[in-house]
Length: 246
Image (cartoon, rainbow, N blue to C red; front, side, top):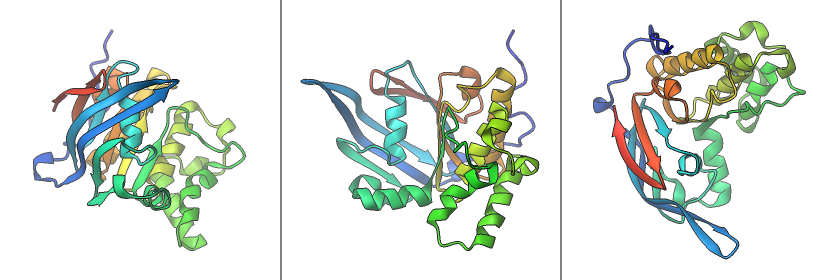
């Protein structure tokens, strides 16, 4: 039976996108991979914009290019041709060193399998991205405590990942993603390893980040229930962008 209550209920109205500036511009992007002697096209002539505060879901069958597109926007991978401009910066023109610095200050990552360091506490995991900044120890602590409050895990900050549930681990991962106040949050199947109840809690949290904190979120998902949390859903099929639904 379909649950009539959505993850965004009670989270306030979505951001009015028409009055927001474009923060991500994707223009004529192409990407292919070499498999043996064969060139496998993955993305073909992709064009779209994302506005500040937009919560975008990228959907499509396996092999459609969703994760590749997410990785290109996040600066993890590089385009073969075309441009991606984020916050006025053409990331396709950056070299590897510049791109690494840009990622550290502009992108928050949320992964399907959390990617927490098992020998570090929740606090220490969230603090990791701040180690690359010039913040003092006390300033880092203030930022980490604030991020853990946002995900309602202040009481678990001294626990290790093995002492946390899957949903709690993902909330720690989200705190780690937002602790640097990045320009964009990218999420690759953030509910893929969670039960339905935990998945709904995570999507509720992401709704709150979008609607109350104005975070720009780009999420890849196979889950139609997770996609319901997004303001905009775009579909990829065989490397082409087919449509967008508000």
